[in-house]
Image 1 (cartoon, rainbow, N blue to C red):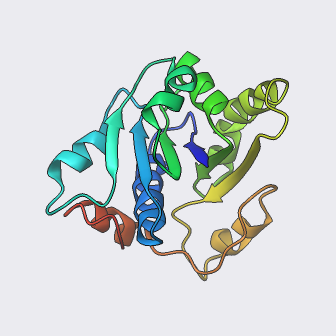
Image 2 (image 1 turned 180 degrees about the vertical axis):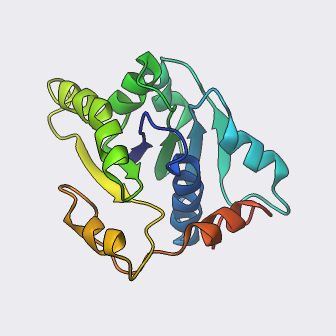
Length: 181
C-alpha cells in the first residue's frame, strides 16, 4: 500500500505522522519505505540523526515524478509512505497520483480545515484518473478532554480513533530517532 501524507499547511505534523506510521508498520513485520518528498527534507534529517539501526529506509525524492519513479524505488517493500510537501504544487499532485490512500493531517482548528481545502480539491481531481483513491483527515495534536478536542471527532472524513498521544510525545519520539512515542 502507498500512503501519501499531505497538507499544504506547514506545522500540522506531516513528517511526524509519516515517521511514526512507517515505524508502526515495520513493527508489524512489514517492510516499509519512507519517501521524503518535502524539499525541506525533515524526514531525511531525522534518519541522519537516528541512533542505532534503522527500522526502515528513508529516501529523498522531492521531484514531481514520484508517481513515475515509485514503482522502481518501492520494489520489495510492503508499504510506502510519502511525506509530502507543505504546498500545493506539481510535487503534491505527483504524490497524490502515486498514493492508494492520502492522509491529511490537521490540527483541531477551523483554520487547519480551511487550509486543507486545496489538497482535498487535488484529491478530487486525481479521482478522475484513480477511481479507487481513498483519503481521510487525521486529527493530529488533539488534546483530550477539551471542547475543541471533543469537537474534532465531528470533522467530516476524519479518521475515527481513540485517545491521541499529546503532540510532545510524538515530537519527543523523533528526537532520538526511535520512531515511537
